Length: 339
Ligand code: FES
Image 1 (cartoon, rainbow, N blue to C red):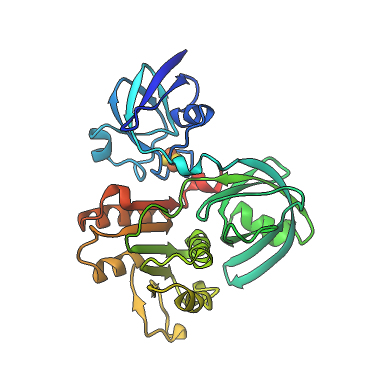
Image 2 (cartoon, rainbow, N blue to C red; image 1 turned 90 degrees about the vertical axis):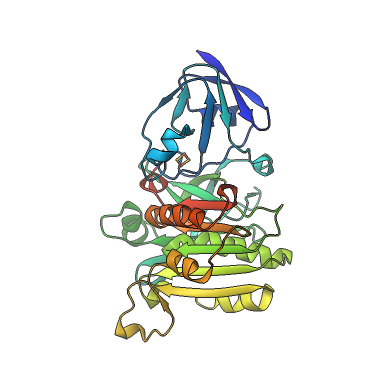
């Protein structure tokens, strides 16, 4: 059965059937709504139900708090219409020209850059263009049918190949694939680009970027993209890691300091040991931002990392005056690792 969906404040409308999510119906109608995990876990697709009824499933409390639910918010990637509905949500018109494709690629390098991180480079077919926005991700499609999502770490202007930063962990499917099964020159298909995490090109507000672990990947892509385009915005990069080894590719902040006027770098270790010989900031990375900024009302914030960090940042930065529309996040949820 089909229902009418009206988006506010734009007033745009589309038809949505009751067997797929509102997000999916919007995409079929050619409208780009914000999303990340597509599995009810990240909160990127949050919209406010103004009128009508939704069937709602699999909403992770991390992504949608009790207060959000009480205020009428729903996760549109896991909500289906049960009547005509009106929903308040901003569209992402600037992604309308991005085409999601299934691409073959060839693994050119698998390089260990930290005890628990490998950089994987995938060569793309010469004859086929692959366009994306800095901040987006792809889903690797393994031969056994498993899919895993990883942010693109290279900037869009570096064509011909894509780069991923993959965290290694015990009992992890992708760890086994990239340490035991796959090797250089193997073919790997992927779908992408996906997700709506990206820099707001219409803003000149100072940016605070918070990267936890391999959440550094999309942030790196955005900063490389800004340097390439000569974008001059004040940027404060807070990079969190357990210990010093997690600050891999450590030459990059120096390069950005040289190429991006207004770039400042604050590495933060949560579990520094004497072996780290660390004299810098310690503690939780989002707390370092709170320690440095009493008022966030004039900033835009871009956060990528574990859901617990993203959730704490969303809550605590809002309490410091950050407007909801100035908070951009990509949470590495279980659904992000298998959609
Ligand atoms: S919760 Fe809907 S896209 Fe992540």
